[in-house]
Image (tube, rainbow, N blue to C red; front, side, top):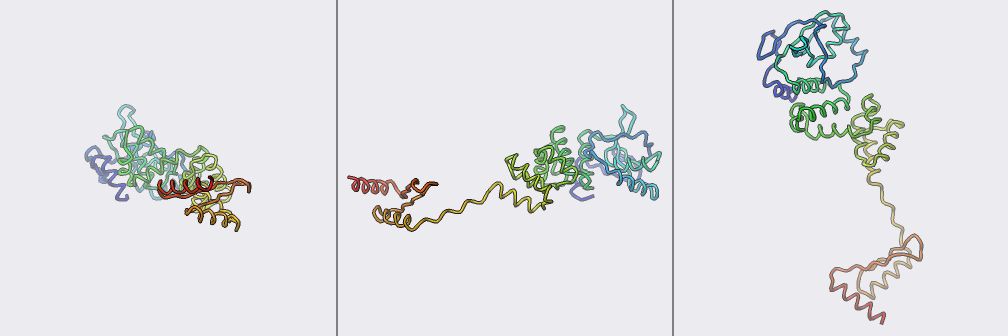
Length: 290
């Protein structure tokens, strides 16, 4: 297990180590239990299990056995063992026809620990799609009042990474489904989030799907949408430049003539650097008028 995730697990388990020696150690023990006594984790973040992948794992279990025990917690009320970590292995063991399975049994896990451990294990294995990960984060934050800083420590991620993943849930349901089925990547999702206008975001989304746009291309397109290139200024005619020059000489100030869409309309701009200078220009104009 990666070190950062290991630290998160230690924090969640209150320092208890998951041992493999079969000893009962601070509420932890290993033994074989019947598969009919095991129930799924109610906080399992993964919503889809690849059937072909499960069959391959089941075939491996038939040949070599289960190389790593699952992790469960005993529910006294149900007289069942609820999976904390290893639901994919459990499902494959069922497909392989095993009657019992080796499990690390906990007796001291609360709901927050179960939810976090299931999420962390899947993140470590990189089995979750971005939306499943985001929903797992959201569940921990909302149900158990965990801050994003605590969540970052638990999962071995930066706070920015947690925040960026959670923001994917603000995308439309169509975009979220595309992230779930792999039509677009998390990088594409983040590029779409760069666009605040939902209609423009949807246009780029459909373009990404139609043209198989790379993440870099999607990011560049999003930047262009949010900061479109400014129109090139129309070059001033010699007559306009001459008129500006004559006014500047008469008033002793910078003058700009900005022509409108129609040639006979526009704006005359007089630049000044102080109120005294503005008063001087006004006096010169008054004298010329009078």
